[in-house]
Length: 395
Image (cartoon, rainbow, N blue to C red):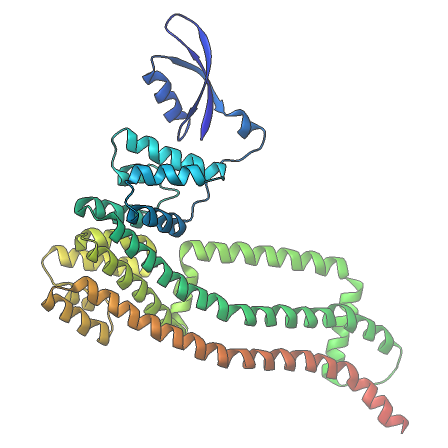
């Protein structure tokens, strides 16, 4: 990010300097390093005019482009310079500029990445740090790209399976709301002076219609307040992990969520171990990608491993395995290929999760359609039952 700095030199000359810095503290430090005194620091003029330089960096795309340049024989500095030359986005250019500045100052690549924690995750920084120890950055980038693509594949399957049911819920809910909020009150006005006894369910529905017709404003305000409260409640439970705890208690679903989390855990640990990161360090790195409940089990397993217990036994004691993964972990410990076995376990569970998502989608969609049809059809039948009754009496 660029800053305009009004600086006073040692001979009391006021100058305006534009520098690239992470924040105002960094800008002041750079100015003082030049022997100047910063009297005023503000964002550069382009930012004050509304041109945002907030970087939006895709780690996968950045890693793919960097890997291609490194495989072509360029050094890390030359690769970043090439990326900077072709980049048109102002925010991304500032990110690349900061990376280059740090490298030219003699810092390690992982240290430069760590200075921007809002863009580069601890997992990514850990992979790069391990690559610096083995001098094999391209291989580590390849592992990260494969890892992220596998995670995205499972996530896209979940999203794709949820899109159609959500559309059905939205359309069906909209139709039901239209019938109850608009059609039923008008039918209630028609039947009000009929002077006939209606079926009790129809009478209940029409009483609601009359209530909605006379108190429309109150109902709209109440609905808005309830929806707002629900949004805040859901956000609170998401932040505190309450939704995850509730999902774990749902029969059938809880075990699948656990398998999904184990697959992510195994895949991440396998990638880190294959990259040369020690097991205890790797387990500390993956703390942020699992739920709070699994974090607790993972911390207990870490303490057990530090006390000398094998990984498979520690995972088994803390409910971080299944019967299949436990066997694979023990084989990995005996063969010295623990990272590879963790990755293969994750691949096994990814396939199981994908098959379960497909089965669930095929079963859930027709059930949801049937429920929506019953609700909408029931409202329509209850509305027309008085008409059927009147037609029968006339005949």
